[in-house]
Image (cartoon, rainbow, N blue to C red):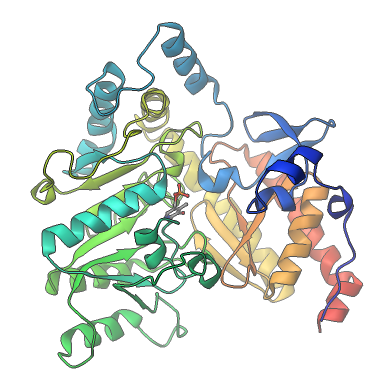
Length: 435
Ligand SMILES: *Cc1c(COP(=O)(O)O)cnc(C)c1O
């Protein structure tokens, strides 16, 4: 096995209170053992004078960067005016403004007709609501999810998640989900949509008729595997043919990350149900949404409930974000251009070292072949002032989730650091030992 020389960051002990009182379940804090104080735009600051370029963006929760001035001002004004902070699911001015803006800026221009269900505030709540509704509407139990999929940590969503370490925490059987091979799982020669169709069409395959097919168009935690539009269209067709609902989990890939507000735009299919969270509030405030076609709105009042359904502060910042970034095509045009720049740089880097790139839009990464190498690179990046994380079954994909608002020059600067640290790691004893 390889040994990795400890980086300076490994040697800094946890601050006392965290060691004493915070559960050992903490994770990101171990890779980045600093105390953070402030953040603005694409930068985070620790309390020892360190400045970090954020290529993680709260796992794509901060697509518009930290503390965007327009969103911040909208929230400050709302609080100063004694706006409702918590209102269960009562009608509030903030909720009305959000729904009207979402309708005008997002749904109507895309000719989408969805009802909005405000679930509990995190992504997993939106997924739970989606699969619960699909089971209720279809009267079926089985959900089809995919290898390497990630959908959250509560039991229903966790059952749809592939990762064994996460599943292991459940403590009860995770059932009523079948994990089918995602696009490309058996390599480019095998069309896994055809395999799924074959299994569903065969009355003796043992696969029960599904309530829903739940899919990420780009697998955020599962290694940035991007499904092709053709494969996704086939999956949509399979869902339709077999009476299942198509749920697109757009929690990470949505809100502009993959070149449109929704990750499936312009692909020629419309999901029955869509989940959104992460960057929806625009400022890192918890806020999740489950969207579904009107005919699926078969809940009885209060049948799915929750105290924090509709975070009014998040309504305010989400509305400001929709108005500022999505009222015209400027922002998404910039995002597409930056995504192309990112693709170009990562492709060059991958070709130089014989690695592969992954992903789509501003959700891209580089598969360096081993989790140990990827971890050594991201640790070295952190010491050089770049926050960047790994993804994939073996944490072998270094993922670039820069804020979408990042300047091209700053994006290039961060990629320069990544390039240098990959080069260093490959030159080091580590690489020799890994062979
Ligand atoms: C992060 C994520 C979730 C879970 O969201 P939480 O807010 O962590 O509960 C679900 N699906 C996808 C695709 C995600 O990236």
